[in-house]
Length: 216
Image (cartoon, rainbow, N blue to C red):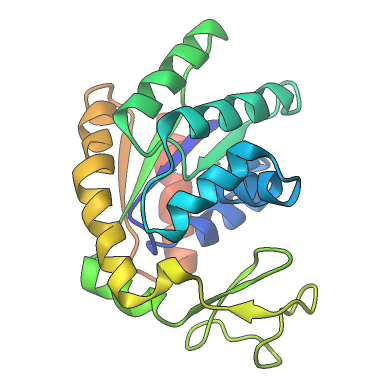
């Protein structure tokens, strides 16, 4: 399977991506992970990406497309994949269309997680992220065993600048104006699978799997 996972920031894409990797056996490609790896390696593309992220803006298309297509080329041959955080604009979607056409393949489905924006604001204000491994926690719904410490690597947990309420609202405005047109793009191709992201995690996962099985 080749899957794109869409939805506004804070809709639970990262959580569902992790579940789908386990249940479907696909390889996850997260732009967030790509950006963090590029920054650790002091890759100029990664540094430029985080300059935009810290301002609550979308990373320029050219940077994202280059990082993602390079990573897709290195994925295990024959193994399915799931894109988390890409594409975010129609320009990125068209670049992915061209890439897949060159590889003579196509997407299985485009999963859209639907969550009300005010619920997203409330979700993100209590989110914390590990500085070292990038794992995500939530002070209410998924708290760490030890306050301020990552359960997986012991790294420090912090609130990202783009999770603060004012920045979240700005990110949602950007999503609505620039990313939401992807819905029309993929709906027109018959690939869009709308999933209610405001249900329990396991229910959302099962609904995604069912929709993908029907589309496959």
